[in-house]
Amino acid sequence: MWACPVMGAKERAERRAIVRREQDAARRSRDKYRHLYGLAAWKSLRIWKLNLNPMCEAKEKDGSACREGAYTVHHVKDHKGNLELFFDRKNLESLCKRHHDAETMRRVNEARAEENDPLTSKTEDVRSPHWVKENDPDSMGP
Image 1: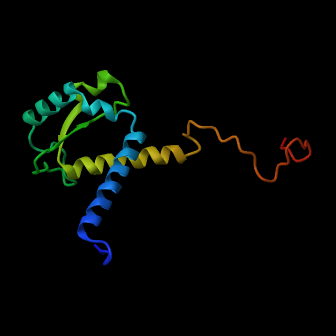
Image 2 (image 1 turned 60 degrees about the vertical axis):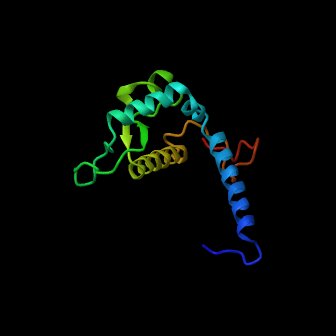
Image 3 (image 1 turned 120 degrees about the vertical axis):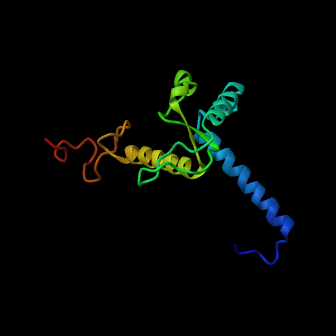
């Protein structure tokens, strides 16, 4: 990592802390269900699941079991704020960081692709083509 010759270690650490706080705040504002993970019931359920399955439950590409310890409890089906699904024990799996990050990134990419796909997008594009003059019947289509 490149270090600024003018800025000392203390200033760099303070700057990193500020950036981290800004990133955390941005993530919290994007994820409207993040507060659920702070509930005592979730924390208790998470500990229960990790005690039940301390090893990663994901499979490697060759079909073999992952041999890493699990540190994350993952929702198999995205709960989207549904409390029944959020606390459903059958909807949980213990994952290592590598597999959890990969699954999370897969879901994020799928959601982005769906948002940008005009066939599956839930938002209607009401912009008219640039060649259509507003209120001009001759430039309108059939």
